[in-house]
Length: 323
Ligand code: F6P
Image (cartoon, rainbow, N blue to C red; front, side):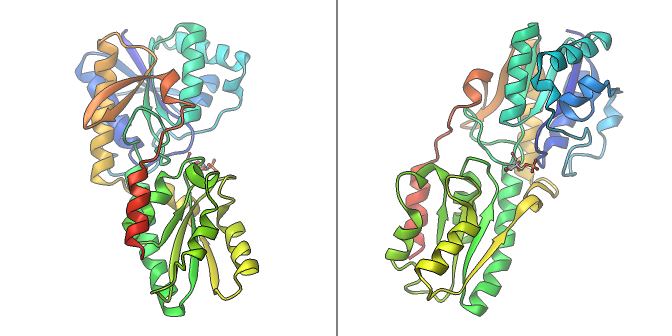
């Protein structure tokens, strides 16, 4: 391997720039050439590739988003699209890829790597924290802090008006942001997809009289067809329990922005450097993760489409602290 291509794909996440910087600089440190691929897999199809030197990644560690831009590329999901991508890689002499992204991006990486026997290392970049085999994903901590700050603000108005707020947070099919966001912001409850099919979380909350000792309440709801989302839950409360003064707030894409926290910058730097170690170590088609503060290699097949379990102790903690 002489030349390594790097791209970011799928939803952006704070810390992706720190990861781009770490991969680029570690690669150059070890004697590789680096090429930056713009707009994710789309850039491989449309040939948007530039040489990356250490200066290309100066002054970006503190920036949210991704300087390489990102996309969700439908064409890469077709064999014809992937063939075009492969041709571009050959044309640029790129003989390994580092892909920074979430579940969908690593799924694409896995298919491509198998189809063309091409070495790819994945880095978990998503605010959702839903990749199996890593304790944290790049961007998750920043998004969690953003959620916490937003909920702190909403609490001021919730308390003043004595209202019940349903605050919807991102996470796709996972409840990590909702559950940990609820604990960090002192919310009364979190409604998450992981247990939505087990219990009617809303009915349970109301029956337990979750406003017993309080004149306002905040419930974090994970976006997901399984929870139904904050709007649907608020409608249900209005119909079934008309005594509550209910409001909804959907935090949306502001959760994806902002300067990465120290924790995300450090995680991205470690994982980025480890991606190059992995290539030097002849690793192929693995995601670099962190487990108990150690770098781990997780095969793509395990990292994706594998439900990462939530820690049930957190649910219990939230329940005990919200009385
Ligand atoms: O995967 C990251 C994420 O922000 C999810 O939490 C969310 O469901 C989705 O991306 C939104 O995607 P888009 O920005 O394409 O609407």
